[in-house]
Image (cartoon, rainbow, N blue to C red; front, side):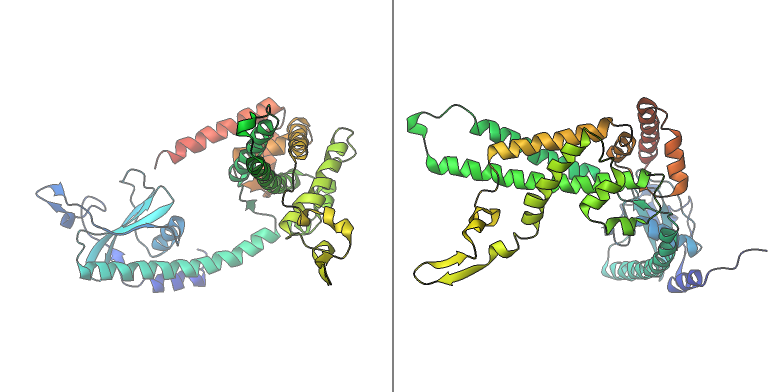
Length: 380
């Protein structure tokens, strides 16, 4: 007995009423698009549509009973659709965007194309609501992955880290000749170094968030959900996934925690707290509630000296070196660096753990998987 059709499938089909398979041979290249044996140019009616995404369009048009074709370069699928007496190409571009084209670009055809796009978009909305409901169930059962923005975050951090190193070297260069001496320039260079250091710190701790998520995903002993893990404080999450009793890691972690509390948190939370409060004092104007607050960053234009910034660089480098070489963390970091989605799905984690016989063999397995993915993506 065949499985009964889900109610939402009928809704999608009804929302696409009026779309049929366009006639024409060969395949989706209908005869109306040829003249004297030569293909006619296709006007770009709607190009590079990304919302809804290409994969959603592919699913809903398939549910409507339309055939798809694979006859274009850099395109995973094409549908030849008849709608309101006209024929249209609905085609994918590199599994990223999709387009609607026709043999004519007159006003009437463009208006029909607009209505066709609207119909397809509405059908995708029905499917999206169904996917959201199903996603909640899958997440509850741990059948999900996390998007991995490692390249974006790490490259941004590395950019500012390198700027800090270069800026500190410039500050430590031999004094300029007297005629080239400028207090304004010295101050501006110090301020620029401080700005770069602040950005470096912000993106380093953003990078740490990715590392903690990956370590949690790869932890075979975890029992709590990702949501519960994310609700823990930063130090609690570190304690959960890092061996903080390690003699080499513990002093590095202590330094990181100090930088986070004293710099990252204060900076990214708007330098909030009692130190921001000012009171009016006759004859003096506004003063802090205690002169001790004058030493806080909120009252200083420059947060980072070159010495403190370079010290932070060394601490960050030490942490990266530790997680990249310790057997308890290196596999999760190696996977994170691939940029592939971080798995919480048991099947995928079991596969990955089977490759963890040695760092070299794990790296080779990841590289082989990457080569296959690259080959598959180059087919479109």
